[in-house]
Length: 157
Image (cartoon, rainbow, N blue to C red; front, side, top):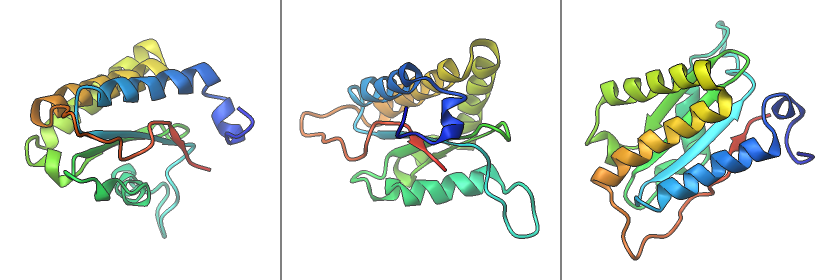
């Protein structure tokens, strides 16, 4: 965990981060979609407001991680700000054309319930698996698929 920010060590073990990354690898084995998980301690402050809105921040992170540049525009970001207890899910235009805001809200609700009942690692993995299920319906894995984005958990500072 030496490479990880100090705040992350309070919430995640190496095994937690490995299990979350493994869930992304498993997910991408059934879909051509790309999934990333980004966790940071808090939603950064916006001018004149504290905290910023998690969905706005998730959209910023989505672009910063290059998720808007996937071949089929089928990337999905699961964003958490742990100390603020905020969560947002952003799907690129390729997947959003097949599912609407109500779907992302259901994934969010599933994650909130699992986070509360089973913990951080289980909640994130549940979200990854649910997103993978729907991505696989609309973007099944193909023999020529390449992994366009890293599978590890992105940790903010």
